[in-house]
Length: 86
Image 1 (cartoon, rainbow, N blue to C red):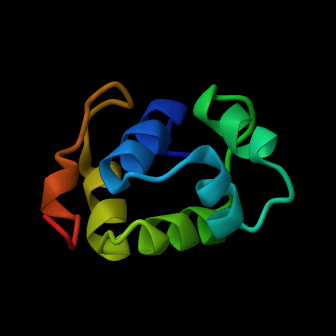
Image 2: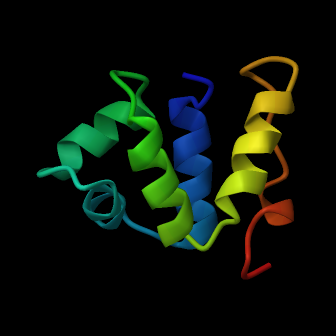
Image 3: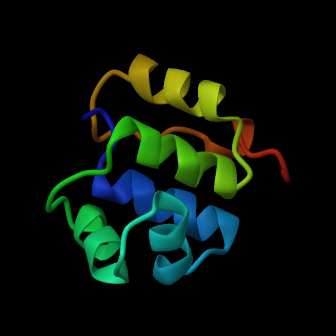
C-alpha cells in the first residue's frame, strides 16, 4: 500500500481524532487494529482508508492523488491542501 503508518498518524492528528475514533471510521472492532496500522503492522484496505479520510474531513481523491504522486514513502504530503477544514 502507498500509505504508511506515519501518514495515518499525521492524518489523524491533523483532524484531531483519537485512535478509537479512527478505528470506528475504518469499521474495525478494536482500536488496537488501527494502532497497529500506525506502527506499520498490517494496513487498512482502500475502502477503510477512504472511510477514514472522508471521516477526517479530507478530500479523499485529492489525498490519494497526493500520496500516489510523491517520490518516496518517506516524503510527507501537505495535508492542508486536502483538508476541507483548513
